[in-house]
Length: 171
Image (cartoon, rainbow, N blue to C red; front, side, top):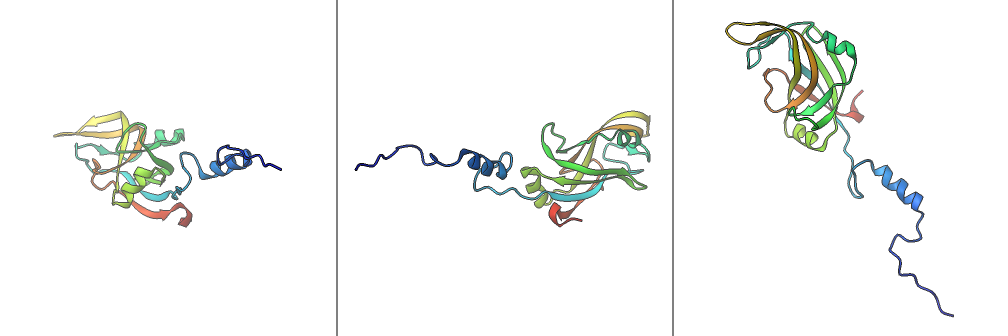
């Protein structure tokens, strides 16, 4: 008796639904052999009240209240580049010191930069109510927040974040 040998591709005869399920388990954008890293948990101040930034702008307490009341999730960008999503903010509040943020750094490039020491934060905003300051800059009374970025050199030198660990280690 002769046996029929198929010259089909190596995956022939395997359950296609099982194969699709195993690829889906890898996650979006991942290939076999790659490992998805856990997000990095960070927190810090994206803006500090009453402290001039490099351009002379000073943010007043309450300036972010309207933006924060809207409750829309603001993007976490890398270096203010549109489309360069670094992760997502999970908490954003105004306290007595400034705009406190906590977030998960999920992007591969952003995680790499944070691991290399990136620690600056910077706000992207549109001024709504402001007063001129002498000799330069503005007193920002109310602003519309557009995004908060992870940056190399923040305009406000003390706008920094600390790495708390990975999401899995955080409580």
